[in-house]
Image (cartoon, rainbow, N blue to C red):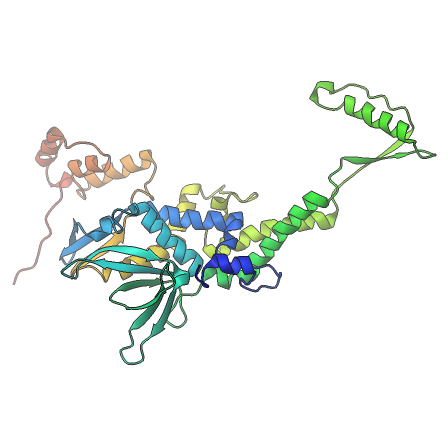
Length: 382
């Protein structure tokens, strides 16, 4: 195993140092449910978006074309798995490294993801280009140029390597992990009792204790609800309640979920946080805000880097249309308004609803006049 493998750091306990004294690595951080859910929510949502390639045909026009991004790692990964792995590397390590697979003419045929912990990055002093040192599975160190490796960094301070979100959040995540461990110890070793029975007067003998316990156990359960339990001794019963310190400790675990929500930009409602409510705003608006303020930053970063690998006048773009699709009622209403105002034709509206063209409606639209059909743009010709 490479010395940079996160499994080695976790085994040796040499992860990121934090104030809570808990080792935090990119893999151990996934043991926190909020981190796991945040990473899977962002990576899975973006991986489910179509990554389309377009060619500019005019100042305001474009057409969809085929490219290697339709299946970026043929024969090895599905497009969804490839995008999900790319986002996982970005969200946990802050860097995604892709080895360019080229053909005989130098054209790119695919992009193979590389483990971020096995790649070192530096900048060449003379050319200013990035130079990558990659340790393969056999432990052999090889150097590659930016022609062979596509590097997608997260937020960076030096422009060479992206900052690891887990490394930056090590103190917050360490406190959350320490709270989980403390909660486990409390449930394992703590007193989880409904109450305490103490004798009135002299202490009970072992025989009397057994009689008291058997009398209570025989009348426990739903089948004995409302029954009277006979206890052959005079006893005092005191309910056992959780102390204020223990209740405050459990509140700190909810604070850990809020911290993960801040670090990854995921709304608390999507993390199933108790107490978080979508009342008054609606889950649809929450999803729109999630796409605008969280997902768009990651997708734009990927789009611009991958577009640099395409031929001139071509670019790639994630399609959010289905993800932000309105309810069926609102969609039909918007389509009717667009058709009546001439923004789209009847056939285009039917295509958005996955319906075949309607020759009859199209003919009616043509005969209805200019108010229901799209007008060509007028150009000033001097």
